[in-house]
Every structure is written in structure tokens, then in C-alpha cells.
Image (spheres, helix red, strand yellow):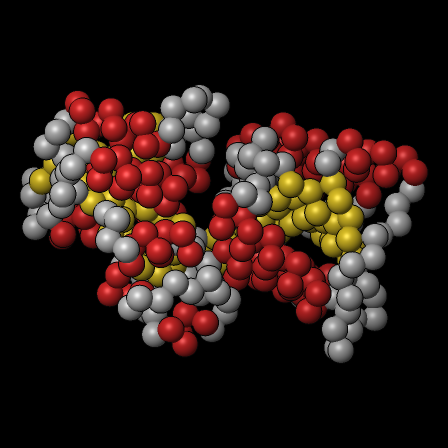
Length: 331
């Protein structure tokens, strides 16, 4: 991809913010105007971030425009600075995946106040009038995985939680779990370990501490797949046969764990690639004078070993691919 040209002052601002500019070619059905898009990624590490990044780049390449990208590496301060730098460049639209939705909300508001339409993926950004957000039903994913655990345990048992209350979006998942478990009074939450992204303790160590404090735990609910996989390793190391974990996100790594019977029983697989595609599509719609839905709930698939049938698809979240695999949408 060719590098886009920016003014010297703006180039310095973008460089300081860690922003890289690249342009994507127009497809055969090109617009009369080649739009300038800015993409503020909260993270690119892990499969969720990679699928989002690829989804945006592929969509802009297919639909037209020039894309300038910044990765905040889970640093909300850095992401806010990057968004402010983008505002100086006056893009036609700004795409955002939030490292911390509440923390970056003031920067997003500054972009909106500057007249830049903002399209978000993965998370609602509280208190700001984003043009359109494409995201999973986070509360629903917590509900579904809670019911999965309760039914797998026959409606009675002791479980532990690995959550992330500091992140508003991920905390919705734990709220969904607790709401669903009201219908299962014989499922007891005996311990909770809350992840601190600034701390040194890993989810594996957290699950090890839960197992030590509560050796009769039968399942561990995790707010994300990374914790579910690390928890499964801790359970196996402790020799706790039959104890299982569940997670949320999807991707090759967790699918491999599920297929390999490591102890991860369920992943609520999100459609990150499709979220990004929807953002780009509706940016073009809005810039063409048409409307965009305020909130779009993207597909989530409840992936178990029976669903995978030995396969490890990396492209399940490309629109139409899950149907080809025979997967049914759970949410």
C-alpha cells in the first residue's frame, strides 16, 4: 500500500501518537470521491484484535477509501492521544475499537464535536453520540454461558468466576451470568478472581488460587477466552479431572483447546471481522447521505466440540462462512 501524504505539522502529530498511514485501492465499483478514514484500534494483539484489524482493511480495500491506522496496545491514554491527532487530520469518518470505553469517551466526544462521524466496534462508548456501533450482546453472552454451565452440572454445583469489572463492556458479561443464575438456586458461586491488567498476576495464577481456596469447584466461568484457556491449564496441572471452563471471544487458539479436550468446554465466538465490515459499510452509507442504525448486534456462536467437528476455522466470522460450516447463531 502507498503511504498517504499529510502536512508536516500533522505528520509530526501522527508520528508522536504512533499512527501509521496507508491507502487502500478502490474496487471496480469506485465512489466518485475517495474518502479518508481513520482507524483507532484499542488493541491488535490476540485473535480478536487481528480479526478487527483485518476486517477494516479488507472492507476499505473492497469499498474504497484511504485508511490511516493507529494501535493503542490496550493503553487508553495513548488511544485518546491518537484520536486527538486524528481529529487534526479531519478524516471523513473515524472507526474506533475501545481499549477502555469509558476512559476514551472524552476523546471520542472531541472527534464528534469536530464534526467527524464515529463508528465503533466491539463496545458501546458511554455518554457520546457515536453514529453507529456494531457489537455482540455482552450481557447475553454471559447469560448463555451461565446456562450452559448450569445445565452441564445438572442444575447443582459449585463454580468460580474470572471477571474483569474494570472494563464496562466485559463487566456486562458477568452481570448476564449472575442474572441467569437466579434461575438456578443450587448453583453456588464460591469464589471470584478479578483480573487487573496493570498487575502481575495471570489468570492461570488466579484460577490456581481459586482451586486452592475452593477444591470442590466444578466449573470456572471466564469473561474471555484467554482466561478460560489459562484456567484449563491450571485445572489440568492440579489434577482436577472433570472440572471445565467456559470463555468468550472465539478463534483458532480456543477452538484447538476445545477440540483437544483440554478442559475448555465452550467459547462464545464473536464476529469481530463482521463488526469491522459493518462499520466501513455504514460509513460509506452515511457519507452518501443515507442513514445508519445506531446499534447493530452482530452474530455470536456457542462453539463446543460437537459444533467444531474437529475443524478449527479462522474465518468463521466472515459474513456467510458460519452458515457454510453449519453453525447456528446463538445470539
